[in-house]
Length: 290
Image 1: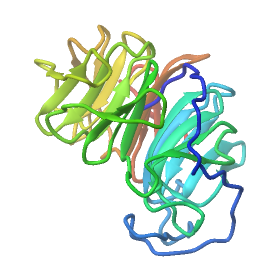
Image 2: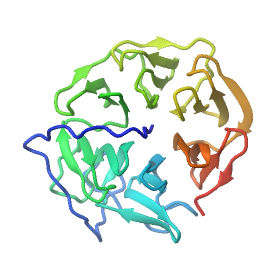
Image 3: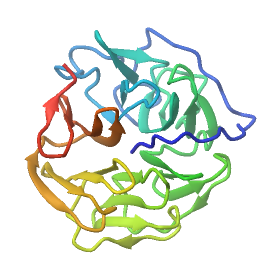
Image 4: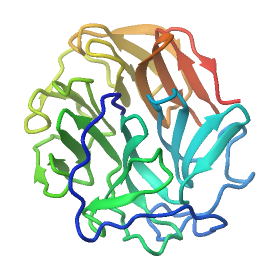
C-alpha cells in the first residue's frame, strides 16, 4: 500500500478544503457515521494508538513509522506514537513520497469536511489535508499510486491521473488491498477469487496462477512482493509476483501491511490487533510498536 517515489501535485478543485490541526474531539465509534471517538485506553490496543489501523508505512523523508487509524494519523518517535493532524477516520492511506500522502475515509468531528471525504492529499506530512475530489461521494478503503495514475476502490474500481476526473476499471471482485510496484508497471489486488494483476494501471486485470489466497499484499521493490493469507501465513515473491513461496512464518490476523526498502534493506511491516511487526525477509518478525 505504499510507494516511495514522489509525484507532482495536481490542480486542486475549487471545493478543496485545507485543514488545520484539531484537538480534543470526540464522537461516535461507527466507521460509517459522521463522527468517531478519540483514542482511549478502552478502545486502543495494548501497544497501538488505535484499535482500528487501516494503513501503515514509513515516510521516505526520515523513515518514521506511520499508522493511519480510525482516530487520525499517528507518527512514531522516540517516545512512541503522536497524533499528527486532525482526528479523522483514515480508511484508505498511501504514501506517495517524502511528506506526501493520499487518504480517504470519514470526517469524524471535522465539520468542514464532506462525508465521506473523497480523495485527500497532504503535502506536509499529515499536518493538514486538502480535499481533491469526490468529496461527499467516495470512501476509498484502499488506494495506491501507480506511475502517474492513482487507483482506488469505493465499491467500484476508479482511476485518476489528475486527481480530479475519474474513470472506472473492470476488476472482478472487491479488493482488500491494492498495491503498485515502485515503477507503476504492475498493480496487485487481493480478492476473494484470488490475486489479480494489472499491467495497464488498473484498466484490465488477470489472475496470477498459483498465487496463495492473500488477504494483504505489498511491493517492497520492483521485484520483491510480500503477502499474508487470511490465516496469517506469510508469502514472498522475488520475481514480480509471478511465483510465490510460503516462508513458514505466521502472524496474527493482519489489519494493515506495507513493504519498502530502507537504509537497512527490505522491510515488511504487518499491523496486528496488538502490535506492529517488522521483518527483513518475511521469515522472522519482531515487534517494533512498543
